[in-house]
Length: 143
Length: 143
DNA sequence: GAGTAAATCGTAATGATTCTTAATAGATGA
DNA sequence: TCATCTATTAAGAATCATTACGATTTACTC
Image (tube, rainbow over all chains, first blue to last red; front, side, top):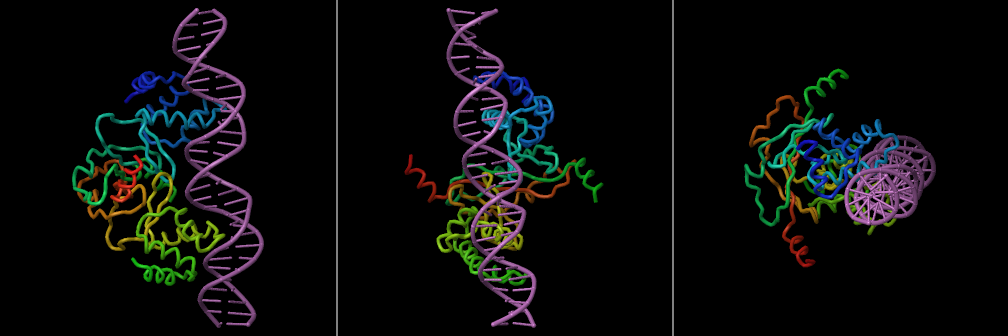
């Protein structure tokens, strides 16, 4: 996924082009890591002072519905990142501090059988958490 | 884990015996499934009208700290269940409707290597979601 | 049974998110 | 280009789960 593709998807689905949407997507395209709504809000407010947070939330959910962003929930808040691959099912190793993430290509569901007895399975979540080298270094300095 | 063990753990750690605590734990001991704080509150209010939800939340977090309950986060709310095994690391298959759950003994972290390059790993989450046969049946009736 | 610390009550506060209504701004077609 | 229509945004209120707090009550210790 890149910025251009994302804007195309918006257009194809009848969503209008606005500078705010483009700037939000540019942020995700540059950062390629998990961001909380408030991170996006803060970044956007540096350019658009008085920006409503409703705008951020509404657009984040539009982007997510269209598959432009993928989300996860960490510590009771939703985090969003630019979809890394539209083709392959994959999981992530996520830095709990900065949201940087790394693909995990293997999926546990493929690798071992989960007994489905008595259940109709509809989804799963596999995430590995840690600290990237940079954040780990920064942490050590405070100890 | 059973009710008696749970009460023992409380005592050993200097927590007082109260009927409310015992009743909360009795509920978990009977249900053996994931419950949201509000489920617990509702159940308890049938016996203790005017029960403060502070009491529920505070006790849930005490129980969790002591390892009596295990928790997960689903749809932005915490869910709690009686710890099923204090000995083995395990995961769950969870019914999204009623919270009923089933052990998954295998852990993906044991079964395949996650490249740790550039990251210091501190944890992981693996959960499988679905509907138990009962809830699946109930769903069908409304369609 | 009295004293003390813990537990609970009642309610206010918080933080993330969603909703509502009115104003504004892209896209479309005369 | 201008008018119009509809999507988008602003502003703030509302909601939902959760945490915090001062006052009161209760469980355990002596």
